[in-house]
Length: 424
Image (cartoon, rainbow, N blue to C red; front, side, top):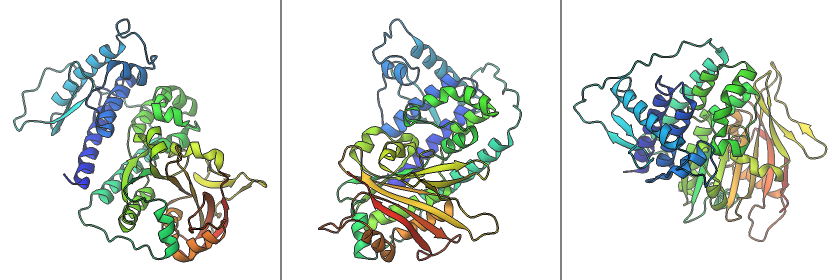
């Protein structure tokens, strides 16, 4: 099976899991949703064949790593309930699904199997009427619609059959830069931003730490956080279960895959929700987004002067330079020439075994400008001249802020605001 086919199968299975989680059989039980999402993620992302009770109790239900499973049967009870709800879903609402999800007894690793051509007679299903329609929150409803659009755009970009032309590495400085990101014989992780989590923080004003994001403990706080910000908890939960990236990030990732091929490297597309500390310590990576939409950026922020802030009134992100003197870079006001900003940072990964490239922007136009800038010999040469020289011409760790003029201007229509090395 080709990589494109494998990605398509993974996406189809993720979407199936989301449909199950949103169904009336699970939508009213946060614990069963958490359990389903965790177990299926372990199979789909880690290729887990065996998931033990201790792991589930610790990761999903917050038990101590060495808790006594004989005295505490929380995992067995909820796994039994989840098996029953899965049977009910595939016998009722999901009767037309071509793939069935099952959790075998004695092992908590879900199995995805094709449904037989002849659909078995429906099992008797207990009545589970959908919950009453909650009061509509128009902000969240609009966000959910946009999320679906982004997901559809992602699928089109990632699974189109035609092979795009590999983008040329146009000059020696461009080649030098990307040779530090795409290393021969080693994969580079392209980590897409998590738009749903970013949007959730924008709507609620509740910032998530990387620890909350990684262990998914934020899912348990949805009712309290949503209530405090006037959002409907069920709609908020439904939004957070979606897996989608921004259109700009997805488009940029497609160009990165082309660049990897041109540089003789290999890029692996990852979703922020599925990434891990182990990979960030061992792999070379490209992190797209900001610390809200991609919390994996957070461990590198102590070394950076730049921060990205969200302005809620205008619903826009803007960069803030925290170095003395501190300065905010707001985008133009209505009626003015449109301006945007993007930032680039190149640092060692958490284990010092490779590099991490961070790319953040004020929006889609600025993200497109960043993609153009990073393949333009003239501008990368100017960026390099602003950094300390090295014997081999390689780029030292640095951070840079660039202003992009116009909605879709060419690479020359930018200005380097600052570029500075990052101390070791």
